[in-house]
Image 1 (tube, rainbow, N blue to C red):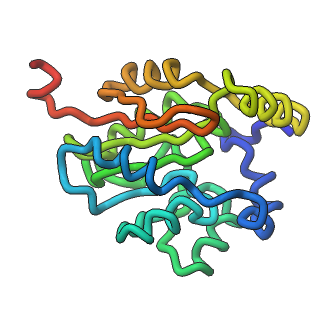
Image 2 (image 1 turned 180 degrees about the horizontal axis):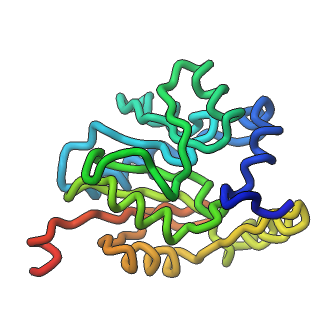
Image 3 (image 1 turned 45 degrees about the horizontal axis):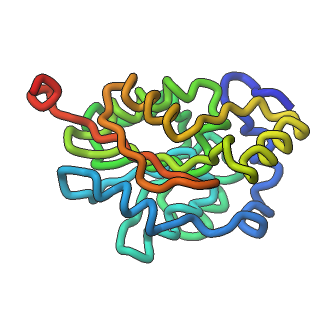
Length: 202
């Protein structure tokens, strides 16, 4: 299927919500924590954007963080709520949060499904306070497993966009974030810190 109504592959995820957690592995909490540690402020208010059933939120909850799950798939959010997670129904490109209102945003295994990933990163940077971070876990298309995933998603009909770690770091930098590669491999993590106006001119 192709992306529908500017909302990515949401209809597919509505349909598979009940099975999603059975087939997806746990999120890498250690790599996400290393990304969050790139922040220059205490990280307390966190959004799990395109967080689906709350897979990444559950992983971070073991370390004491309780992100709010934000997703456009009502089916996925219903699973997150049933698991006791706080949820918000929203599009990653138009987050219903004020400027500088959270300490961090995580996006796990989801950016490649978004219809406007560059816009989603810019929107995340708007919402995160100076000193906070945007942390994205993605799949490397230049790895053996990554090449297989690219072919599989095309066969399903997804209009997915994948980036190498260097390419995703460039997307972050273009959004005004200071980027750092946190971990590499098939599933890699990039963190981008929101700098203050003063720091950006240093």
